Length: 363
Ligand SMILES: *Cc1c(COP(=O)(O)O)cnc(C)c1O
Image 1 (cartoon, rainbow, N blue to C red):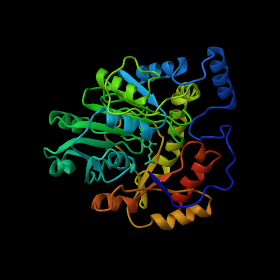
Image 2: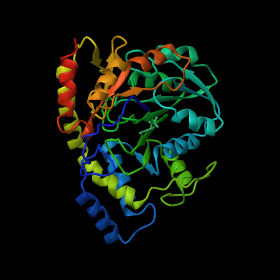
Image 3: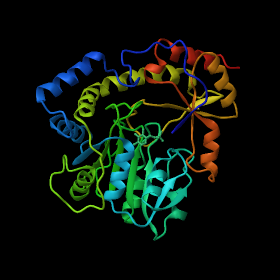
Image 4: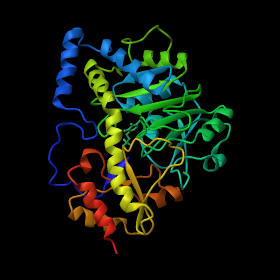
């Protein structure tokens, strides 16, 4: 999803978490995970911790089913297999190459659509020329913590299109319809890998309100954790381990604190960047509660790469957005004008203030 434009901040100390800089977990939390596994005496897949994590996710998101699997690619693969898609799938020309990889792997026909200039997601207007009878499904990608437009989902559901939402950065970000789309015909895929606000070392989940779809997902995942046997096209080793579940449960407890920490960093950037002449923060109308997992900015002119080298001199890594398909003008424009400021622990130790000062001092 991101391209590294420069190098890591050389002076950065390792945080108390050696694996990931987005969660607030410490060594003590990991010790607690191991103690819980020993207390349960269950060391293989989909035991008591995995069941508890799924239940906690279901209640956090307020959805009927959260099916956890080994990582986000498996989650998308299992969701698309369980949906038994045969027709064409429409993908956005911006955000992630993962949907195209999985759709190719499943032998589906892919059609790309450009995105909307303000939301950076597919919109009714951008999709309209692409939506014919062959189109069976549409994949929406929720980048930078921005949630998708509920009226677009209404529109697609009314046309009987399957909607798959790839919630790349949007766990715990709310729209007017809540933390996840809770309606039949809409399937959401989350990833809990490095950089995510909810972290389970690796891991992902499929969230759906559809009982039959959820059971097909569980059966495709593995016999572990299946509630009843149902016919499926294939099975895979998609299991979620007790260790992943234990880390996920601990991380979930820190989500509110992580959001608070992210908002504090965002406030430092906001003070310097709002209405800035060179680059300004991206705001997303459909997101009523931000999780702060990303801080995307939009360059009004062509100063991004120059500024990126200046920041590199300060040891700051500026990340750029990436199109998933080259042929689309809006995605191509955004590729030259969107970047991400460091957030999470990557912005700690006064780095966010230093970047904000640099923007304030730009001529
Ligand atoms: C993190 C994540 C990805 C990874 O996206 P890249 O394009 O590989 O960076 C994909 N899907 C989901 C749901 C994720 O959370």
